[in-house]
Every structure is written in C-alpha cells, then in structure tokens.
Image (cartoon, rainbow, N blue to C red; front, side):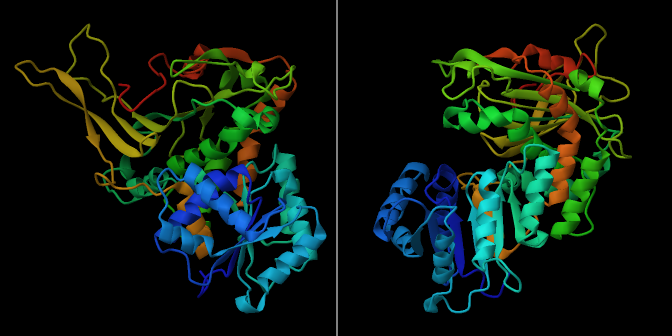
Length: 494
C-alpha cells in the first residue's frame, strides 16, 4: 500500500445496478469503520445530466434501498462529502480530459495513485481504458490501477483478446480482476482451516477424502439480466468464475508464503492438473438444463423461456453440473462435483468434503443400512459457518451410532459479517492483490471448460427443463461415480 493510499477512487457506471447494490453500500461501510483515508475522494462518472446535489440525493436513496439497515446521518454526511459527480458518456473523449483535470485539481496535489473501478459491461472495458490512455491516465510512473468485474471474456479466445487490450495500457500488477466470492469470510477461512491446523492438512488428500461437492444455488431467476444472461448462461456466469475459484482453494497445495503471487501460483497448478475432457465425453462429464415454471416460496414463477428478454430460440442453460478429476499426487482418483443453477429450492452455497469410510465398520450390524461418512461442510450462504460431522454413540444401553455435528463457526454470537465487497474494496485501496485473479487463472479455467462450451455450441436444441423450486434435473445424479454418492442440499442434510 502506498504511504497515503489513493487520492481518488473513480467509479465508471456510478448510477448502474452494480454500483448501487454493491459498491456504494460497501464503501459506506468502510467509511463507518474508519477505513478510508482522510485524503481519499470519490468521482462518480455517469452520463445522467446531474449536478453534485442530484448525485448525493441518489446516493442517499441508493443506500436506503440496499444497505440493509438505517444509515447514520453523521457517517453519511462525511461519506457524501467525499464525492464529486462528473457527467460523461463512456465514449466521449472530452469527458476523460475533464476527469483528468478533476483528478489533478490543485486541492488534490500530486496524485499518482488512483483507483479506476469499471462497473460497466465487459464489452465497454476497451472503450474506457483506451480513452483513459488517450487522456494521459494510467501510464507509468503513476500507480493508477483498474478494477474489472467478471465475466472476463466469453471463451478462451475472447478472454485473451480482452486481456491483450488491457495490457496495452496497464501492467498485470495494476489490473484487479474481482470475484466477490473470494472476499467471503468462509472462503478466506478455508485457507486458515486447512493450513493452520495440524489435524486437518494430513488427511486432506486422496487417502482419506472420497469426493468433494461445490454447490452455488440461487432461488432467483434472471430478473432484469436476461439480455446479458441469455448470451452467457450458467457455465460462463458462475461455473467458470466462482465455482472454479472455490475448487482451486479446496485443492491447492500450501503456498510458500501468503504473497499474492505465491497463492495464485498454487491455484494455477490446480487448474493445469484438471484432466481434459474429451469432445466425445462431454455428455458423461457435464449436464445442462433450464428452469421451467414452478413455485418459489409458495409463489408461481415463469419458466426461463417465458422470461422477458429471452430469445424464442434460446438454448441457454440456467443450470449446469459437472464432474472434474485432478490428476496430481494429492487428488488422483477423487471426483470433484460442481453444480450451480437459478430458480432452485433456495439460496444456498456449500463446499462439502466427504471422507472415506473406515476400512472396517466395527459398529455396524449386519443388514443395517450403511452408516453416513464423515463430512467437513463450509457454508457460504445463507449462513457463513463451518461444521464437521462425526459418528458418536447414541445415549442408552445399546452400542448404536449417530451423527454429531461440531460447529466450527468463527463469528461470536451477534457478530456482524463483513460483506465480500468491503473486504475486496479495502484490498484494492491497500494494493493487496491476494484475493484477485491473475490472468493465467482466467485462461486455464477457460481451457478446462472449453470442450464443454464447444460441444454445447454445436447443439442448438433447448436444454431439458427442471421445475422451478426443485433442486434441478434428476439427471444430475448420473454424474456420480458410485451409487452411494448424492448431492448435499443443506448443512443438516445427513
């Protein structure tokens, strides 16, 4: 982190949905926690014909809608006073010259440390960085840096092209590719859980772990995002980013240090070790489906094909499940099952690690049903917690066993969770790249998924429907290697 941190934080697309829902509430929370330096100012860059007073009214209304609690008047006054509003279209070269003048205004002094947050569509990234460069923003020796949101490309070729465009103006260490799942406390705690506990790391391998499941389920549909989502689908929108990142954190080797590049080197090694899926084997390793009509929380909802903005001939999936194998010394023979979908039974994200059965089941009567294995469960939502499932004796005279759950939650009762964007935005300000994605991670994730994308691109038939409010298509069960494998649909789903 620079001695005084950044002097400006520029938000392109400041009136958009992402800024309103995520960025502004997170920055307000950092203000309330006293984490923003006294010299830091924000510039809201958007095309609405507003004055600063209009922007601050919008800021207050946006926080009231998305903050989840009443805002403190004193904190808000201090936060709002940091903002200037700059009207400009993303394609207007003159707006970027005005932006540079605002950054270099006399009251700011010598400002060589600016954050540019691109809260805009990825297709607009080249336009923004090109005009920034033409206006003299972002060049060495300045320590300016940009933050870009997913999706980073639509396939491996478009990701490489987009990366080449960004690298024309910014070095790799000035590009912060954000994945908000990496800012979740449970995800960060996974590293501590694995590498700070002597009893865990020795059994975190193929000798003791039977299989791994990673689930990110959403009860909501596409909503107002149909225009984007119908071009992307669940694989591009979720599997390539969030779920593959979770897989690397579960499977990575201990890094030599907590340096950003040391962490990311180990994640890339995992991606490079994933067994390629042959073109003729895609159907055996991945399935897709889309939600049909059904009920969510007792309310009737439309099927995906009937959603406004979805093309009549759409072949886009809203659910994907896949099986991956990691061919390295630690994980050879351990299947990793990943699934994500919309309009599922509830919002639910879980990393579930299933351990092998003991070599001899002493406490098991002949003819009795199989006993449940041990599990380590890392819940990301709706509750962030960690649990370990073990077998223990039931109270009574007989030697019967039951599941007991050890709650490894790390937040005290009444503790307030740190939102993922709060963590990540503070890391941007501090120039800590540990929780951000390097391009070779993006590239290798696309390489892993490229055979699936190619196979599905040649099949324009609509995916099979699953009922909204269910846990997805029953066909997802066929991905399991053994008949005793099944999806975990909850922390208590023993």
